[in-house]
Length: 149
Image 1 (cartoon, rainbow, N blue to C red):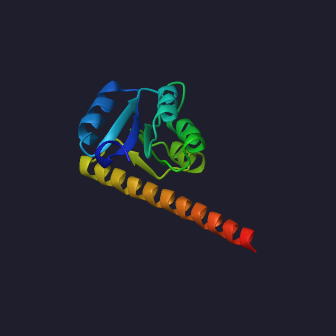
Image 2: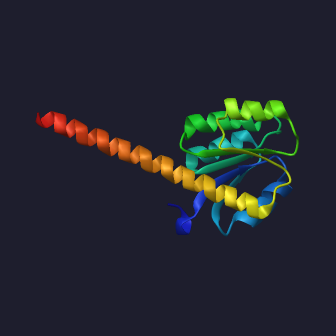
Image 3: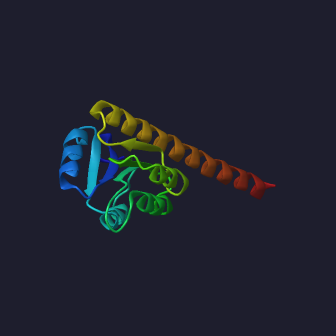
């Protein structure tokens, strides 16, 4: 895994103060990558393995749901979280249906609850990766057994 076994997470928000605040809150427990928009986030995804992507919903040029839909294609194992300061039920529905998100949270969030949520998302990521690894091993084992027959 990443530095000192910290899970790499990507936080995306067009407000620099929020990114700075989240980096300060999370940096001791996670390897925090930040982006100011969806395009920056996609560049980071191509350079870094990311276990959890957390994005604001309302951003110019690309919404959080649009970004998470692309994240799913680029890194399907990554857990996806969307947050917003607005109670927009359409955004929630879109996030669930299109982005296939792990969780939807609202601003402001409780710092302890946010850290707990991110740890839960990282644990879910680990389970998905482990299941995929086991399935690959099983398929390889079955293929070897069939080759012997």
